[in-house]
Image 1: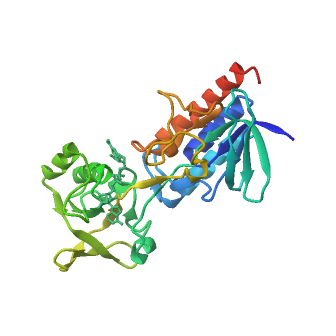
Image 2 (image 1 turned 120 degrees about the horizontal axis):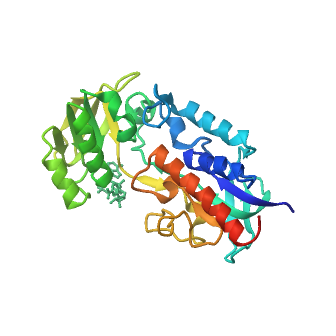
Image 3 (image 1 turned 180 degrees about the horizontal axis):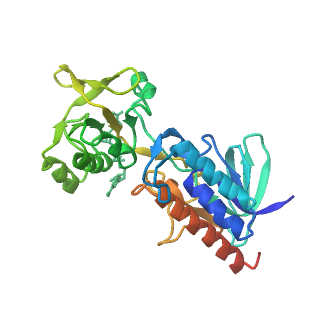
Length: 313
Ligand code: NDP
């Protein structure tokens, strides 16, 4: 059976950047795209903050560019899903991965770039207006609501951080927290409370996102008093957490209590020799396309050095 030098699982900015670097280093990478080819960026519209696109670019186009660039150097891209892995614990050992149709892949290194998925509320009006003013990334999309009124859902560190970020751009931010307290750190809560244009509402849940094509408002309900209210906003940010896509690796590789893969020091090495992690699957802090791409590059370099060190190139 053929043994690959590098298998890359996932096709977001991390996976494709890893592929570009690995292909140029003659590692002949094979990418398995996963369920959502192109990753989270394919669900966003305009990307204005990826360096090198002075006019901005829409997310799906950027992902096609990344794929083409990876293919230009010989990356093989398979539209498929890896649903089982068997890692070798030995340095220089051969790892196994299995596709959904049962094909067995043998490989000397694996770069895991399976990303994370933003959690959504799951109400139909929210799903319908994704891309029409409903976003799960304030840093990506906040700028489109410059000078306008927006709402954000969540009471964790992400929501608090994004609320203060949005407050600098938008005229008013209504922050909707479902409990009577925030889960965010005290420091972040303090920052929210001292920001004048954040209107913090506890015990508040969204019943419906209002608007036909674009967000025009939200109908909220106070879960203590049952009083309902409509608030006019042109953007709704969902910041109720992310889920790293690591179920597949559970029990085989070190992850933190939230399921994010643990990488060693400032590298992309996991606790399994020859298995590297890049992008949002190992990052709950920054979660940007450009930081994911950066760690994708690191993973390819780490894989190349690993292969050299086991004398296998
Ligand atoms: P968290 O899980 O910490 O918080 C999620 C928030 O969303 C909670 O307030 C939760 O409410 C609320 N929520 C969940 N589901 C719903 C729902 N269906 N409707 C309404 N509200 C809901 O996620 P974060 O993304 O904020 O943070 C993840 C991790 O990353 C944390 O460990 C955090 O500390 C860390 N982080 C650190 C940062 C930093 O240090 N700079 C920045 C960002 C994140 P409830 O409390 O009621 O469950």
